[in-house]
Length: 120
Image (tube, rainbow, N blue to C red; front, side, top):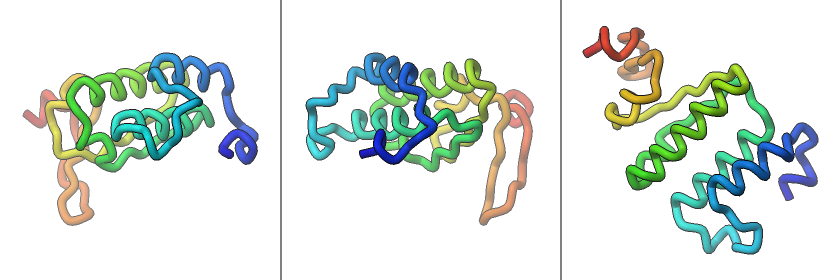
């Protein structure tokens, strides 16, 4: 369905991510695990080549290995495509490896904006 309505897809990236994420097109969406479902959502988003990506705690419920894999995929994508990813999370340990800037938001207001080392 997405293929039929999305004109700006990068099919090569879609195939690469599908292989890297170990997603099969023969499995029905309702049969996917939480991690596989998140990977599929990421594949569908990234294959449209966005310059800015917002992720709001969608990966907090995933196991550590899956979260790391997704962050690495996002890190590679942003590096290769000169894009930006904004991640809302309460898991600071995840950000230590991948974030270049940290924004701390309290009640909808940015109260801190710095790199992780300075914030520590």
